Amino acid sequence: MANKSDTSDTRTPAEIVKTLRAGIGRVSEEVIEEIQARIPEYARPSDEVYIKVVRLAVEQAIVGFLDHIENPEAPWDPEPFRVIGRGEAAEGRNLEPLQTAMRLGARVCWRRLTELAGPLGLSPQSLYDLGEAIFVYLDQLADAAAEGFDEARAHAAGEVERRRARLLDLLLSRPPASPEAIADLAKAAGWRLPKTIACVALGDQHGAYRAPALPPDVLTGLDRPTPCLLVPDPNGPGQGQLLDTALRGHRAAIGPAVSLTAAATSLRWAGEALELSRRGVLPRGLLRCADHMAALVVFKDEELVNTLSEARLAPLAHLRPGQQDRLAETLLAWLRHGRGAGEVAARLHVHPQTVRYRLRQLEELYGDQLADPDIRFELEIVLRARQALLTSGRA
Image (cartoon, rainbow, N blue to C red):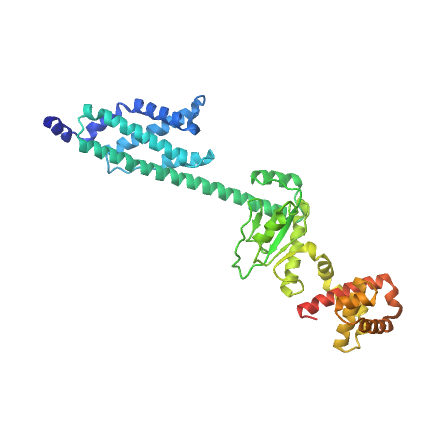
């Protein structure tokens, strides 16, 4: 027994490896059979090309281990196993099947070593050292495969994001792109074509915008001159609540729902609503253009509205500012809510007699003009604009 131990201690790694190399083919087959029997993802008996790839990977792993035992100082190339990790990512799997396969392979190799310990003349210490080396090597393989897997996933995610960014650019282009071009790029970006979309203009505070948490089908353009989102089917079930939750605490405006080819129009309206919010004409926080269309139309051409205001509010121009405000408020309430003094008084929270007195003043100032429906319509426009400006502190 002592002589056998002495013999094992004098054997060089090269001599041990030479013996082990002779059995690589059989060990590789055992590893492949074990992997395919235990891991369904790798059980493809009819796919000869795939079986060749698996065999090559197993043989590379075993040969690499033996090379390392024979010459521990030689540099080790992890690239083949990075390629394997990239392949797993391309197959759409996570790393669990591959890691399981590696552990099974290590177990088969360790079992084979223990069977050969006697014929090889390995001492218990040498066998222990080889077992230790197997599992250190296994960690190296796993790390290399994980690097390749992460690289491939990052590259794929980056490519998808680049395609989605190009898709957003295409959707917001003027003139609008053709439906065919949109459909082709949407398919490449993995984006389902919706029936309608809405654009969201986001307030960018000195470039320090915090992106909201949004579902993956929302296209984001946070680096655009006007940071924005493109939301598919904004009026679909639950979409309103989803946007409320995602944009809570953000200064944003949701444009009207439009067809795909009108995305730029939705963003333009959202941007205008956001600007009116910044000026105080519309409230701050999350705005929906659909709730403020009258204000958006009125302030679309402020120069024109100002000119119309000068003409239609001229009868009030000679009055004191306080009188102007009271009569303008009463006239707008009268135009909006009916011609009964009681209803107008309830809206303004004043006595009906006060309303009657103001209405008589207005009749004296405007005369027959208040009987003309076109003039009444124009008066409501300019009075709404005046009220919005008063609210924002600019009138």
